[in-house]
Amino acid sequence: MSQVLRLWPLLTATHRYDKSLSTRNQGQGQIIEAPILAYLIETTNGRILFDVGCDYDKIAEPKQRARYYDEETFAFGAPDMKAEQRLPNHLAKMGLTPADVDVVFLSHLHFDHAGGLCDVCGTEVHVQQDELDSARSGDDVAYFASDFSGDYPWQVKQGEYDLVPGVRAIASPGHTAGHMSLWVEPPKGSPIVLCGDAADLTENLQKEIAPGLCWQDREDLALESIRKLKRLGADEHAQLWPNHDMDFFRTLRLFPQWHE
Image (spheres, rainbow, N blue to C red):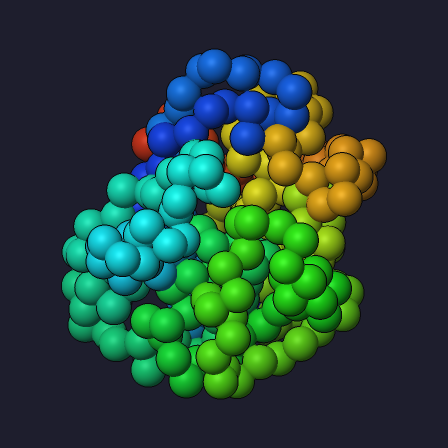
């Protein structure tokens, strides 16, 4: 039986960029506004945070912003992130602190998914070994080494596993080497698959378009993961939630409301 009680989508920032970063070789010249999300999952066995957004200081402090979001090397620029969108401020509105989060589960280690680790120090952090190895290689500008170089209590995993009954890590590599999605069974309604960046947009799922950025240009691996998630959704009557789709995000119950 699932231990999931409630699920909150949390808007941690927004980012304007060329659509082709989400739809490989398509949408060039079209600027989209994408939400940068985290999800808080409350279970009978503790709280799980899926992704943590960006490091606020790297955006808000001019010297750090110039260093990390230099237009010559980081063409899509810095996200728009307000202080109130930091995770501790979201949690405070629920009467919680970062210490009340038991597990951080990272879909992958790109800056807009792992940067906020600095705001949840001390919490157990789950990541795939393949992802950590790839991130540390320095081959991808979307990894900021300082985001994940701290003394965090890592739980380095390999492959799929259950976090608690009703919450399962689903392998979906392609966008990055060790990318993971998350299966969530709420107490009411159909199961939810948090796709992460395996599918930025509904379009990635419907038209089977790979993300713009693929690990080692493995478009085939990214498409295989999209098809895997679609099969899972069809077989289990599950909802597939894309990760950076503003139109889809606006259909969700927005904080402080929750899904159950």
